[in-house]
Amino acid sequence: AQKVTQAQTEISVVEKEDVTLDCVYETRDTTYYLFWYKQPPSGELVFLIRRNSFDEQNEISGRYSWNFQKSTSSFNFTITASQVVDSAVYFCALSEAPVYNTDKLIFGTGTRLQVFP
Amino acid sequence: EAGVAQSPRYKIIEKRQSVAFWCNPISGHATLYWYQQILGQGPKLLIQFQNNGVVDDSQLPKDRFSAERLKGVDSTLKIQPAKLEDSAVYLCASSLAPGSTYQETQYFGPGTRLLVL
Image 1 (cartoon, chains in turn orange, purple):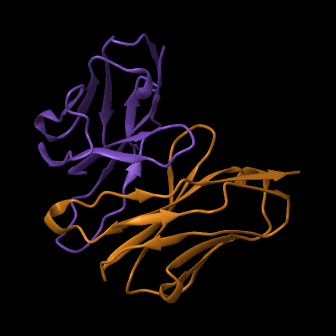
Image 2 (cartoon, rainbow over the protein chains, first blue to last red):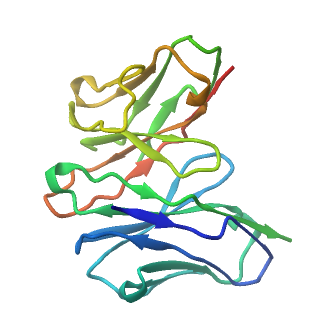
């Protein structure tokens, strides 16, 4: 069965600190996709990144970076030099290959990040 | 490009009343999803449409929830009668139609916050 675990419920940091959000997933499929979404207080889920199971290359986008390791079934997210605007709930999600067109996202419980000035 | 639109943004009703939510997906997106997000949890898929056909409604409580997507564009989710445990944020998302093995990214609307008293 598919499962996503975000063990960190809440993290607090001071501005300019680096912070890593952990995500561990379970799936029996060899083809799957992993996602990170940001949910600010306004409530909308904002897409950050998508990774497929065949691409283990790490990715950097500005202050954001992602570390995908199939050996440990982890897809961790690091924010470098955090800012107050990074304060939000971050969700990791998993989806298996859309056989029969169903491709629902399985979300973790989220990590609330608070960045203090 | 306009994002996913939802209305209303907030709704307060009493238990046993009925309520309806509306969603307009991103133009050109064939697939539409309704997710339920209970406070402190990640979103959970209720129903997925591709064009105007249902792809997955396995987690939709069909005794009280219904959804339709007439003409393959807008969608309406209805709850009748509402229960206290239906208090949640209802998120609509849309994506391009997935291929047989390729997962498209889902883009979310701002959600409707429902409180059932």
